[in-house]
Length: 188
Image (cartoon, rainbow, N blue to C red; front, top):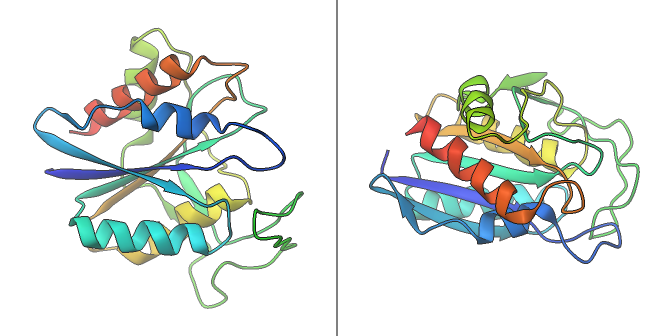
């Protein structure tokens, strides 16, 4: 692996900060000889994935690790699966409010992460940060991004994964950043 694209999201839902942005912005530019390319994404169905895919292709990324905020969680949770479903309890930042719609009507029902969620969770836990594998990335923009990235890079050799971090009130940004860095090191 030579380049990993790590994405984060802008604030949404009336929040002033998104824990994923705080975590990713503090990452170094490289680790273990691998360049870490960072990208801030809009919280917008479809648009987030379009930006991430374009940047991954442009950067020649070998892997894409997306990071999102899951305010109700108390642990860092690498995601194992992305599902072909959009459901929004609140509008995205473009005002979209999909309810039980497929992301791709012609697409697969689900994709499994091609970055090792369990290995990432174990590495984060070994660092003393609470972590667990999650089997639901939800149905909001995080899952939409994870699914679209997985579909685009399926079979291409570009590995895809997703990590949810708790809100900054639950996990300090420096610990969230350390967790994401542990996950990256675990997949090198």
